[in-house]
Image (cartoon, rainbow, N blue to C red; front, side):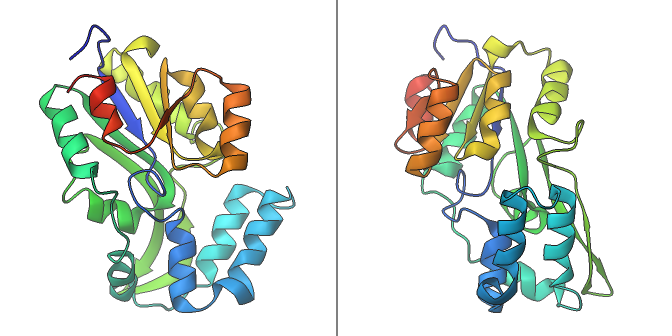
Length: 222
């Protein structure tokens, strides 16, 4: 590796490691309930009318009674970015600890963990009983609850790894990753929407733009 000594790197999941921006939305769309119901909850959350916890609870309620195996099959359709496995494998070989910190669905993160070499991964969990969703959700990664935000989890991992900010990197695709970016010295942005990219760069001009995940190997000379 380069003289930039990397100990720990944290990845967002949806839109960063995968080609879909939201695993929640993907599942809603495949079930045919996005336009009629689910997008309304998202708009209310963006407008500040409801908390993130309420947003997740309302979303999960739409899946009450759904077969959890069917959901796994739908989420397995979501594709990884082409270079994801190679990049993460080479990071692991270089001795870098790898974390996945996502407000997306744990069902998808569980699948990715079967092929990608995460040391840790956290995402939000749909509660199932007897193979059916109960309509409840366990929030492991929040956008607004102190102690459960991405940056809080990353700080804990940095402490466990004895990794300073200059020895830590974060990779994301949206404004939802901005606070995680503030924690590290090397913040990497991929696939962001133009308006979000502009806002992130205004807040943190030092954020580095990636054209593809493979750029990570060039940055750290893997």
